[in-house]
Length: 333
Image (cartoon, rainbow, N blue to C red; front, side, top):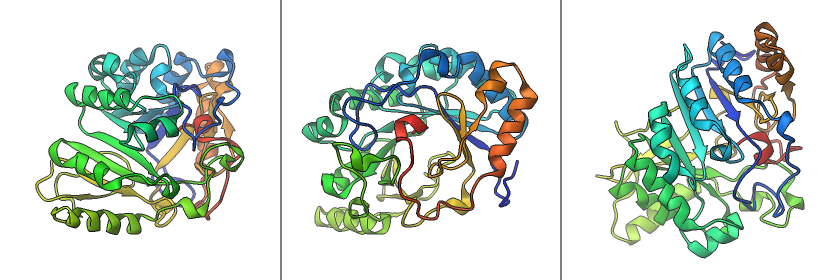
């Protein structure tokens, strides 16, 4: 399945809910966003139908997102159903990790392939500042639960924001002693965060990946560590756009995702589906296509037509667009 620019599209990100047990300052206001009504969110059977239709036209990889996907009732059974869908090769999930200690084993048995845990700081006070309500120990316990359950790879996603003063070397060093794959993601202009009492997006807060790479190596060498080098055979599997490096002898890797300073639009292979069933061709575009009506009607051909319509609308790149009408929690992380 190719878009109008010749890119093969085989990856679908599906938001299971707009609800979250965190209130991260770059993602949503402190009091949250106006939540969707229960009937407006895609039902489990809607999602299963969507995956079957998408797989029939070439989608191979599914990522479940939110909000926080693990707060969605029935998520383990949904994973089982998706993994059993002909044509789907892997199912992964992005989570804040808080509920993984109770659910990781069940998710693994259900067939979940990989987990990405969102974690932006290793400082307890700063973690509370960023998430507003979270506890660092809960997310760290989630990472340990994912490793113990046998997920491979386990990735840690850190959004880099200059004004937060995060300790990036401490993150990178997580990859040395355990098979963790740390990925640094440039802060992106999604939503109208400038109107939110938090760290509103601004160009000054973007840390280009090349700058961050040099900073980590300088700090590593100051501590007697050898610098990062291009990763060899230890690159984690996945459809992601990261460039991977490693410390010599490390069990994991350090990746850099550069949607702004070194955008990868020419290699984009994904569509997104919001929790209420709107297909979004590009994260930075406010153009959306409603697939929920066709799914609710049991109309596979109608759903397929909407997928193709969205596919045809994928832009060639984001053209440095700043700001979107909806926040990340509403779009799907």
